[in-house]
Image 1 (cartoon, rainbow, N blue to C red):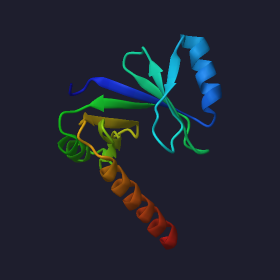
Image 2: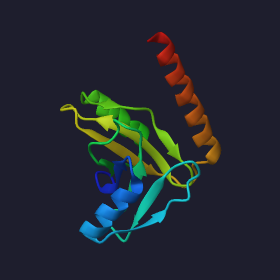
Image 3: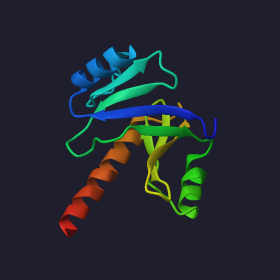
Image 4: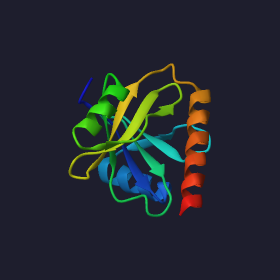
Length: 141
């Protein structure tokens, strides 16, 4: 699976409008992901699978692509060693781990490691830690 394009996300400020656009243009259909607290619509029948996700203003502009890796921590470390940047891994309960990255040219992409053992508790801990980091960064600004 390493190196295979495994998922994509299209950020949008208006998910109904984006679903209508891509549904009409490309014939895609969508289903609600069922993830609590997130407006996230999975594509049905696309390869690779993808999603429309609602984001805040300023976070749109390009799709996010995910490349599969066997070991997300080793791959993130390698991104950094090669001169790119990689965030710490984040959990998706029951699915796996992701890490946002940029290559040496500033192009954004993400890494994905499938792992169905990821728990809701791990996701809650991740969210809590990132909220705390955001508050600390705002206090320093």
